Amino acid sequence: MTEFKIVPDQYVVDAMGRDLRFHPSHVTEPATLTLENVVHFNKNGFVQPIRIFDGSEADDLRAYFDRLLKQAIAEGQDSYSISTAHLKYGRVYDLLTHPRIVACVQDLLGPEVVGWGSHFFCKMPRDGKRVAWHQDASYWPMEPRINMTAWIALGPTFPENGCLRLIPGSHKQWLDDEYQPLDNASQFNRGLSAGQVDESKAVDVAMQPGEVAFFTEATLHGSNNNSSDVARLGFSGRYTTPEVKFDVEALKEQNIDYLARTTLVRGEDKYNYNEAIRVEPPAK
Ligand SMILES: O=C(O)CCC(=O)C(=O)O
Image (tube, rainbow, N blue to C red):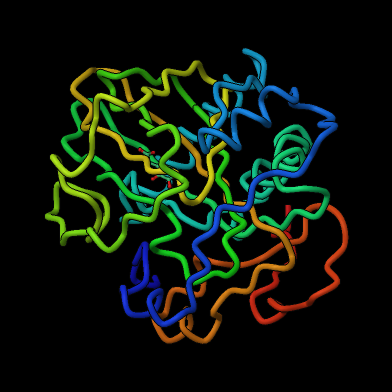
């Protein structure tokens, strides 16, 4: 099994030129979200909660995920390391490319959409791990910065079980110069430590299964440990546009190019920048 590494070393990202501007959504006539949602996304860096799956669809998804987690654990993985599963499992690929999710992404990124990553973020009951405050773009050698996540709740999320937390407006300011090395209690090896962030501004993303939070790659986010008896289960699907280039060589050098594999899910790719990491859907 490939050793699981979630982010490249800092120098890889630093080596890539930095265009730090936020690229707001230019969509003025959204087809699925409301214009208010789009304006909120541009202003705050996220929009949530958006219901995508109804109760029985969410139950079905949860049952599938429970089987997947059981299998991953039997294979020696843990609840954090089910990453890039859309390359392996048709059902996860279907989730990443789900028409109702992609329709919302199109309202935020525009008509051309590339899906490139998937990661289950699962905190089991009483799990002591937290996700330190960070901006995703700090870890991703991609340029320009047009990139976002759909975080899908697979179970209920609330403050006590370590729900996602987001800082409104933080996507307009770049903070990774202030990152510190982090200990094992955090998912990532570098990020902002407690005390570096004004947590009084944080929005707790309390959601029901089947609801989704959409946030930009520059929105400061994190989550606390799970102090409850209810698992906190989420799936992050990552989306960009064809004009965004990945530093493919750097990802290969770090042996983590498997974390970034692009699939055109809507529109046309006029650029062909990322051919080396383009993949076909997995067999069903
Ligand atoms: O699920 C979490 O608590 C954090 C998620 C996250 O960091 C991400 O999706 O980028």
